[in-house]
Image (cartoon, rainbow, N blue to C red; front, side):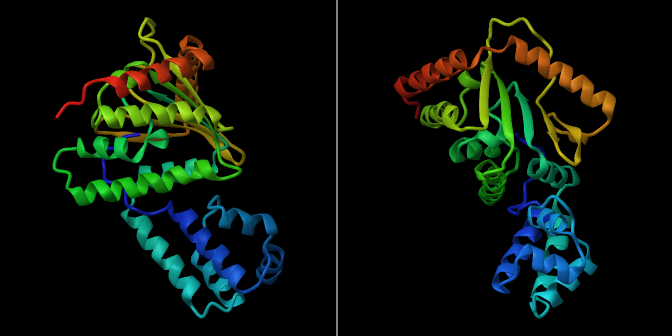
Length: 281
């Protein structure tokens, strides 16, 4: 997903503090059950904070710091994450947390490979396309994107159903070598147990998805949510009516998309074409 603002090289604020909490708990030799008893919380609540699925307020951070004998360090980490959160665009912080909580993400992308599935060089080329972007901005954005992709490596990470317009496979981004590597990467994702990629063929007359990209997220303990993207505006909504409309659009696209084997074959063919094309200077 390409966004209209720089992505800070940070984890989602909730997830960032959750990592710190888990590290300090393990250094103190405490299990989640023991910490829960010390704080008067449930084990599930401790687990949710550590996974970044529930925010922690200052009172919790101070109590956990004391219980774990962190000497103010854990509380300081919490304050850092609060400061980090203030630098995130609101929609980006929300999106990153939604990706952490969701068990299913449904993606539609008519123009470029979705950010979650991009190779580093492809992502670099996409980020370079924003006007007035410096090399430092590009690398910062890339670091943030790769951080967000780590959710795919979790054993309990979300299942992804991605539909790409066939134009995505033929639109040059970066270079022929970049495109060849990106297509090979998409083909390799067929072996991932939770990633499913389908291609909407150019022969389809469906116009449902031409207005822009979107993501549908669903999971336990969260409302069904839609992320809607355009060149200059990114927005997140849990409004029931709007989410239902996006779901209907996704179903129409899914019904028109090629099945798994045909999609994989097309992606592999494009990887071969990009590999054998003469290189431009």
